[in-house]
Image (tube, rainbow, N blue to C red; front, top):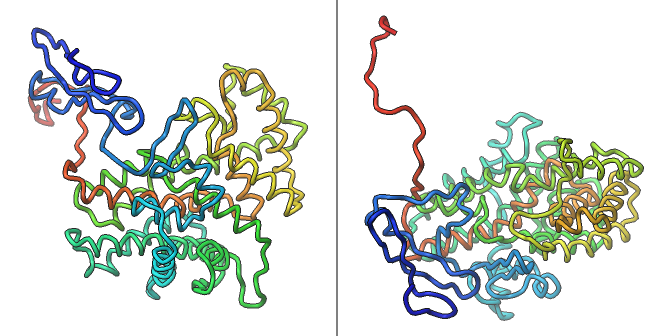
Length: 434
């Protein structure tokens, strides 16, 4: 190793057969150093193998930082705890997209611009009518977001910074409109237009639940809880869906296609669908008196039953978002006074897991998916809409990463390599000789 930089080496030497390759080490603002292996194939003829890219940095980013061991999540350097307590989702979206918190004038301009891009084209109603009535809302959301590129094809010059910015604003503004439309179409209700006299979250709630026959009256805790969930879901570094947005964006694809791809990645039950899986698990448990038996099954390595919404791939300690949303979950349940057996199951399961040595020693604490599912259930949001709700919040992060990628001088088209395990070279045999 050569002379050190910061608290570690400036470069490392790798022995590859009879060759010694010197590889530079890059140091982030925060976090572990990264060995730059870009020239490894050229100098050794070898690639690296990293299933799931869990040990590989695919890009440089100034947006989000996670320390899984310490339970730290920062948006542009700001602790998630501070933003959750003092900020709003739309202000956080501005922060992620622009790098700094806005002053009053900047935020007023941003909010006005988002508010006046919330409408969707009238012909999109015909698009929704092409879906089966019971189609999953995520299918409708992905398709309609991708279709936006057909409506704004005249402003897709990705070399123009203003057109890039406008596309990001449109996505942030229209995602709640499309999400609410997908929900209302699925239940046979007429699609509601956005009310521009309301803020971002209340506007969405009215599009979701308001009916022409009577005004919508909703406890303020509902909007507060939803705003908080959007903040906590806004970004999470290079997760599967954000990496998908960046991979598609690396090809030069337009932002609507890139975000639509992110939506489909988020749909997976191992990613954004995890909170939906929590509710299915609670339904499987059924009643509070069966929680102890479920916990025992979860601890039995020979039983296939799993507790969904516990532990996290990145956080080896308590998920910092879960600490925040746990308090809001109990506040929502207390304020709304909901009598729901599944919510009773959830609360008893939380209590059991936080006290049981098996879970405590393994740090299998309830995560953000566990609590977000409970809140959505309490707010009477259908289970199939849970991942859609996640997508609304994550749109802020997706467009921030897409914007960042467009000006990255090191941006290259994504092209992972593989270890080929198929047949060796062989000759074609005519069909009558096989």
